[in-house]
Image 1 (cartoon, rainbow, N blue to C red):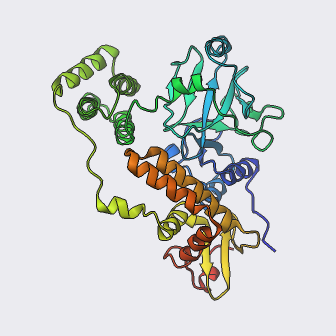
Image 2: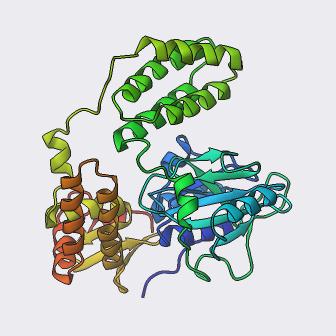
Image 3: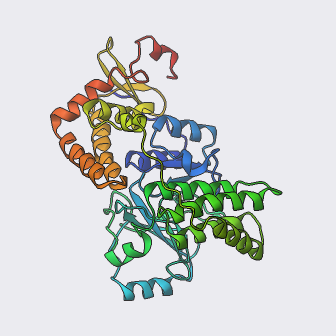
Length: 388
């Protein structure tokens, strides 16, 4: 019988529950929205072992969930005073469906959770109307039962918690506003996010230079058709302002960068063979995907006769088929690979492979091949050295 989960308080318990739903979790500072880990939402994971280590170090950490493709969710953040804009949004499109909903620590503030649509959802603040923010790819939200800086707890609305109601799909009109699927290629979107992060992390004395250099690189991709110019300008402008540079200076820097690269297009590099090997459309490729996504929590010991799962405190025998649940999640994630592929032929090939991978024989093959992966295969005496 599996050992009971060692919990480090209600926030740790909630983090585990979200991770088991496939939501990627990361710690936030106690009674704060600020990340507590080195790389913020980029550290978000479903690994129970990592989550246990975080909350073992501080049981008061708030819980953050990375939004976007990785967690399969995006969030409409309705701030106090945003109900008027929300009513206008619904009047212009469709009434929003019942979905998972949380009350934030601020009076009348709420988060509406929607299923990820399979195309990039950009984060935004006020773009849909005053008091309406979107948290999608490259963002995160604070989730219940975290504590707001004002001392109030986030909570799920009655009957609207995950597990009580399914994530609704956003109406098509809302999707056209939050997920401009063709505005940027996958490569361009990644480059823009990286440029934004580099600008925001620049030090005083180098902010102007860093902004200019990153803007030049991004506007080259705009010239090459990899990124929409309006989107690029908005992201760069917001990031530069976030460093403390005055608006007039930011406007001048971006204008100079744009003029520098007119007529000088740059496009995504050709994929290398290594990239293609890393995403083989085969049983072996699926086994590697399983280990990459879930290997932190899985071990296989041939001598002891089976799979072991990390329960937050120790390795316990997999008596309930957890490794197969993880394998099924891995198969579903392959469809996301297809949705982000930039070439139609590649997209079709990946989607076809994902469908074939749903067969029981293919899932069995994935699990069998994963048994011998270096980070998973474990000698029996290693369990004596692991924390118990």
